[in-house]
Amino acid sequence: MIELLILFVLTKRDFTMYAIHKAIQNDFAPYTSPSFGAIKPALRRLEANGSITSRKMMSEGGKLSVFYSITKDGRKALTELLLEDLSDNPLQFLSNCRIKLSCAEYLKSEEKKDLFLSLKTLAMKFKIDAENILNDEYNKLSFYQKIMLDNVICEYSNLITIIEGFEKDNARNG
Image 1 (cartoon, rainbow, N blue to C red):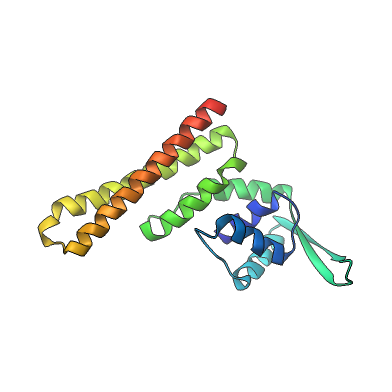
Image 2 (cartoon, one colour):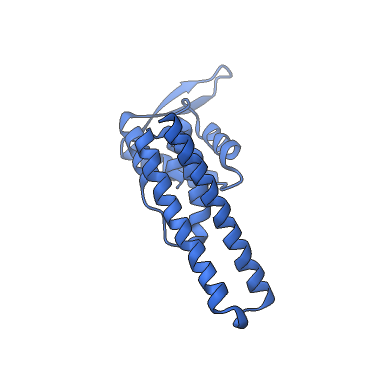
């Protein structure tokens, strides 16, 4: 997911590694907070595969800075990362889903439609799984488990409603 975040922020303008970290924090802090230790190797991987380029420049203060730019291949890779299926792990799904939805503006209308359908389908599956556990195992669950399952069901219901709103907006503006 770190590569997706880096590529997305680089669609706005060229950044240094510090500025990339700051942009990710500004835009995605409620969902994720990657460290410099995660960003630096991701930048190397993206540069090695041709998704980004770097150039060194002297700042006005005489300090050497490295600026990163997204390439045409990087834009293609960003689209692929956004449309890539998410994990079947519910714990990873929610934060990764939020990141992808936050970046959906980058996609073309038909690509957004595919993304929204994919995310909504998986969210519905997780919601139904939680409802089935709550219904089938109700008498075996502790009070705390029941409350937590009920909360999970609400989270997925809210996410599905948000995605449906995005679908309507995309249909209207696509």
